[in-house]
Length: 211
Image (cartoon, rainbow, N blue to C red):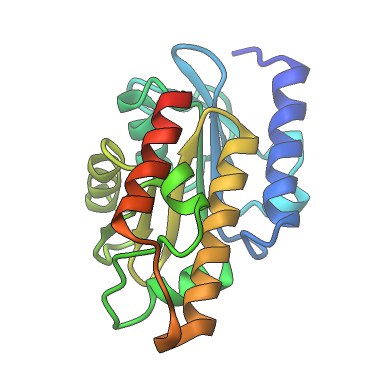
């Protein structure tokens, strides 16, 4: 299948921006993008997002995940095409492993509230959590897709995070704000002060009215 240079160039630039923001390390993480109703781009397995080239991009069919070029997609392709199939409002899916957010994903503490700054309820809303399942497994893909039906960010225990958006800007913004909130939570420890429920509801309603 032919993919335009514009789509390829934008995808490479998006991947490199994700890495430059400190959201992934070396070959960790993966990114996908809808380029048509039926087709998507996704990072190839073992590729480094910070150094991605056009030759490291797999083209897949969204409906069944079929590979349409000779590039092997990320092992996590199952939840990428599953989310794009179930969420027509979403064009980009990012699996990232930023330091503080991943520290929380690996903690034995049961974190549920991340609303320490207005950006969390405004841009993300409630955050979902998926228990540890083997990377690349069908079980993990099913759980992530199910969680993403009602959330825009999912924590994968002892693994990382997944977030979604309409554009590269949107997923980078969501991931960066979540990393910031996690850093604040870890630094403040038992001195942390969360937003009130009234403030959370107000901010979330503001966002929903804007979309």
